[in-house]
Image 1 (tube, rainbow, N blue to C red):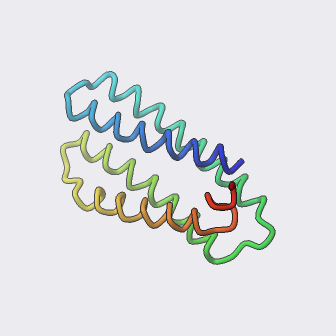
Image 2 (cartoon, helix red, strand yellow):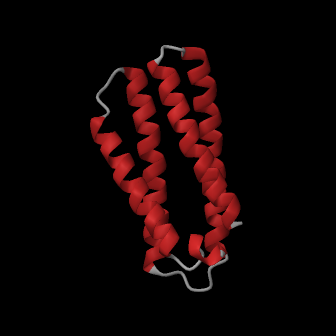
Image 3 (cartoon, rainbow, N blue to C red):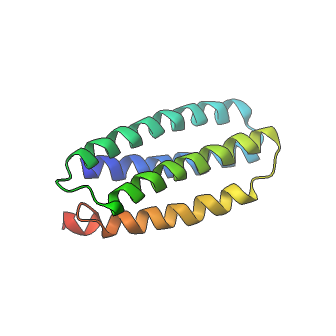
Length: 119
């Protein structure tokens, strides 16, 4: 299930940038469609994350931190898109997104079920 979680995250990040570029290029209808698909991918990310965490024998503080950071990343992604659509400033949310995404990925790779455990 770790593979499904990583795949859903990768798909989510790609769709996020596709949606943002569609918005910036003024393509409102395709932006709405991709944004809705991205929201479905958020649900997949959360579900696969729950499945991965339930497979952990000992839930440590690092796993809890990863859960919180993952949800924060999704929130920052959504805030960038929604605030962009409303014409409000997004700089703070872009910074949050980039920093939290990097920390979440690094923490995920470090954990026992992370990337290094697959090889």
